[in-house]
Length: 445
Image (tube, rainbow, N blue to C red; front, side, top):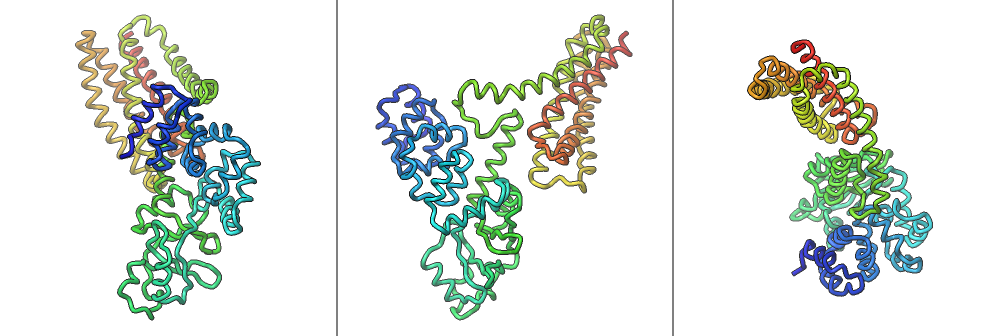
């Protein structure tokens, strides 16, 4: 039984022994490449390099493919020049596409030279598409027959080999253009002389190489097929996108979204150098500082009010917190909808009405609760009224901002997951403080 990864990480880190890695290497021999990649990413740089040097050469390329860019680049830099020819001896186009952004140009050229003519063609075709387009991530191992093929031809084909996640035979015309697909299960029991075109699937979706990879992956997941065909602008069959690749692309997309909310890169190494991590995060901290100063400037406009009514200063964090949480809930919902293609110009108005109703209901409930608490806390009815109205106004404003901020950013081609939370927090802070302190000035002074 394979030793669990957490136990291996504990063993490596607690012993801090970079000299003898034989026991760990024996333990990870039964783990797959994804698990080994995860293990290497999970330990500090010194033991990581030691394990990498002693890892069997035949596994190194596959492990590199499964790693994130930052930790992968550390291992690439530590690999001796003479090792690369052996590592690239069996490389395929799909692996080189995964690695090319991490490899220096000289190594990309070396790896490309190791590809056979067919794989080089696949590589050139894939690099015509951006890495956010499905044409960049194709599987070329597929079942293809001419349009005039019969059941006997299909049975003969699948006896030789059925690639993983391949449940259909793609039919192409003489120009190599995709025409139809036949499920493998339709072949069994059908007379051998029957043309395959009589067994085709009517509802299979066809992806374009230029389609956005996340949306294409979602189509695969919802299609009911193990893979969907991908064609170029002339309908020529390029390859397929299977369920495994689709799942990986979607997982990467959501990981990128989660990391982007903190202004970070999904490829960042857990143990990247302090200077690099600090530099990457400093920009986002600076942006947040500017928005914080903006909110502070608005607070400064009510300095006289705060000096006379100290209770307002005590209650200010409550206003900011309630608006921020309410806004982030709406923002998260809309960002997800945008990512899945569910939010469009047609339904934004309906979404706004719905979120305003939700904000109104929650605003009334929590405004009353907080107003009552403030009244008993400070024994002042007007303070309870002020914070009650401010909370209601800020939660409603947060609902409006939560819908419009990500929609506007998306139209401007700015990632709403990256910038939305900062803008939303600034809006709710400013609206909340101005409403709270403004009402306080009017009613309490």
